[in-house]
Length: 130
Image 1: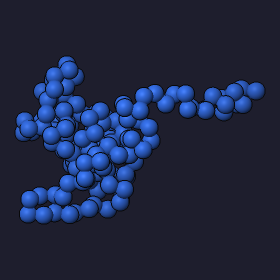
Image 2: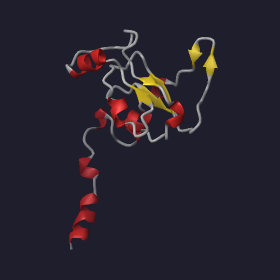
Image 3: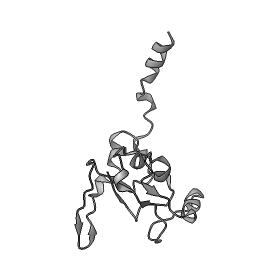
């Protein structure tokens, strides 16, 4: 289930809003999205420029938002119930390696390079055409 948006990493691009099949997020204001779209680095130290996890209970834990986030600003917990680990300082933050960990696990990390050479689906297409 979606747990956190890292304010220090999020650029307000709203890609997570666009790819979420259950509309869990409310979009960041247009000013943040247009700045990010124009290539301007917009970090969340600017209050109010982040997407909001508005309907957490609707999350299906599909990891699409984490997969598509270009800056690994989302943490989706594998549990399908909220991990309400609150402290006096606020929500508990996942360890640094967990941000974007699903994306790295499936080979979508920019540092991994293209995985197109590993795609064997053309075998299925060839068999279906015969």
